[in-house]
Image 1 (cartoon, rainbow, N blue to C red):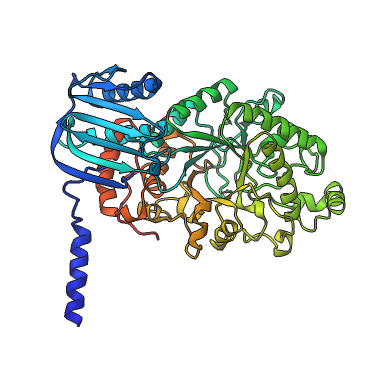
Image 2 (image 1 turned 90 degrees about the horizontal axis):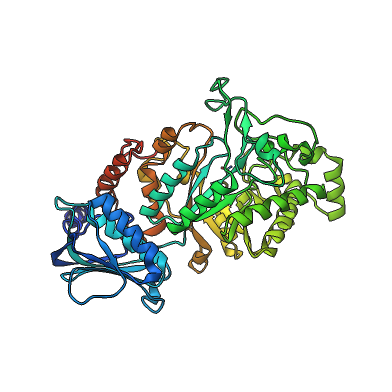
Length: 540
Ligand code: ACM
């Protein structure tokens, strides 16, 4: 019995070490759903023609440029389909591959050429990303093995969040991230544009937000440290720049979801317009990081006018259906001390500060919904004990969050995800111990990032559909430079991309590690600061 068990274990180990397809399956990140290999190859050369209808001109031009830069190949684009071989055909047809959804695709390489088919331009774009990765491997880059790839994502929400409230990075850094997200088939850029330490988006009706709120005198250099950078920090995006970035992202099938923090993490706004705050006192944009007591005065109608005006300008800039309003880490001290908020609680029959927050959040949610959009917020917007520092009595809530809201889980127990999903809320899972890119590689090694499962254990499979996917979050307190930011993001970004895209049945860490040799080379050639972290390290 013991011997048989040993043989079984050895066989399993050998099999997992030498996956049957490992020698032949090309390396694509994130790993596709199905790759069927044939014998032989097709050689792309300067006479290969890209065939695409006029409606696919943007996609064809994108592929042409990428082939020029990555393979030194200049192909012509033709919209008629010539007879003969040596074609790279792009086809979008809603009737094709209905089971693969908008983001799925099929990529066929045969002796006559290459054909990428999808039901939607998004799927075509992802097929092109797989092709670009197929080209960039092996000694002979342009010799592509004959194969059929059928692919679609596991989740519809595959996000990277960048916090620029803390340290502004600027357009070039953001576009670089968008390029790398596109390569990895990530589709949501969650842009954290306001926080205590900085307001980074031009709002025409309230110019002080950027005149005052985008600047601070100094910056703390580490948690609980008295050390400061010793220089002022500032920066914001004009509305023209925002439009340009949103367009750049759209060309890469990435939706930009803006986050405008409320009712907490609002010091920069309150420094700009002190009447927004619960105390009405004048404050400065903080130079330290952490949680701050300054909170919007949720009992003042003028504050709602302000927030609605801001959101109106935001919604004009961002076509995203989803608008994120933050809602995390609200400290209740100022509300508890405010006669106006106390009166509001009596008038609206709100029993706890969490009820006040939910009541406020629902007002904002209704406003956003009235414009045809959908609100999203960090999971504190449901009430409940999320933090050690809160009092159970204050976080207990009888108010109910609007049903259409997306709950962005980051902290608390995973039962909170189960609870929200089983009550019918859509959830994006950004559980901090797995997905926070500001945590170092000891806390979240690459392997741990890769192993994250957005569907929590214990969730009845009938609610799986409510888990839209995951976000990974690059919080900005202690990443003052682009290089320090990149070292935290790369290479873990690829692990999160695979969590979002690859079917569980296809996840294989050995395959992932092999793929990463190519991906890392690509990043390094782009001049990106890639952390040389140990792929086999386990969490401390
Ligand atoms: C958060 O990390 N405060 C959402």
